[in-house]
Image 1 (tube, rainbow, N blue to C red):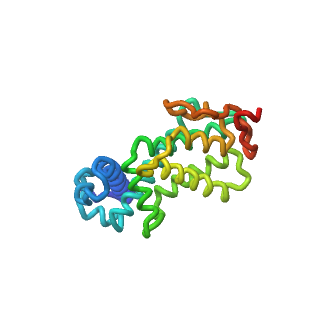
Image 2: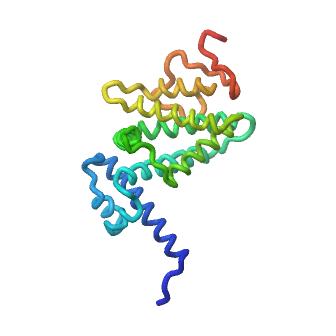
Image 3: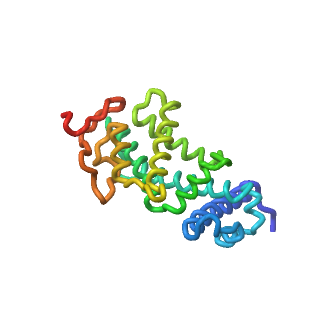
Length: 224
């Protein structure tokens, strides 16, 4: 049997790494960070324990990459969902979809996202990885589609607003409702409640429905 060529080996490594990332999301979401061992992750992924250390310096780095992958895949699916937005309002729809995708993750995976945010806010800080770079590129492209004239400044602001909203949704003992946070974000970007995927709990009282363009001041109820 002839040895595998470099491209085959690279594909096998990529698949092993992705299985580790997916297993991390599943296990931390089910059992929490402390109760999840690297050996458990390797076992769920079906790879040798040594491969975990080969790809990642430690469990915290593995978790951040895993959650960034989940966020990237969720955001990409939301932005590419049919019907694909087109025309002059496409950027607004994409911005609303991005907001809903991130808030939806906090709603659907509270333990996982709370653990992720705690790691980012720890001394270890924000870890750069390929998954985080893909997520950043998608958010930057969304800002560009929305109509930003300075995406290098507006992308970090969008990221900060989304991260702040996730923390607010998951704050133990003082969590804010997703609908209220969504309403505030939509107003910040001048978006109608009906764009994106509105949550089933409905719009908070006083939510506007008018849709101004990018850079236009939000319109509050009572100002029409």
